[in-house]
Length: 220
Image (cartoon, rainbow, N blue to C red; front, side, top):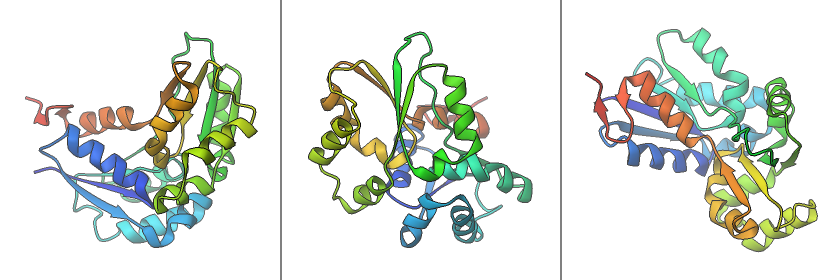
């Protein structure tokens, strides 16, 4: 059985591991969630890489694929891991671009460390639409602790002048935020399209492992 390891510092990794397990039932999913260093993993690229490398060292070259369920690690450290550990396959969650034909404004929910990267600025430039970035560093931890309320979500969006009756593309650039999709949908009603990185990462996983996605069968 193929072994896929999912690494993160919080429940985003758990959410994505569940998603993979549902779509690839013949793959063994190994969850490495560094709860102790969760805040450091979302706060700074250097510390995220250090903690990830320490946690992953016992598994490198012993699993078929390692996936970072963490946008910061993906956009700052994926090349580092691939270069240093050439025999091990790595993937990560890339920033998801919305459908460019809609012409709608985009709201990006992410963390401060992600916005400080060159890759993020290139991503914004390539969107070629009006964007608004909300850095929400306290939300991932509150999601991990079960403390992020619907009221806080709605208040934060309203205070940021993102109103419920606006047509928006909402891009989730933090895997924990997949847990609040229903709240975001309720806030915007039918005026929203939510984009996350789960489906694209599943597709890349299937391609890397030579699997037909969704049915968990090896390609002939």
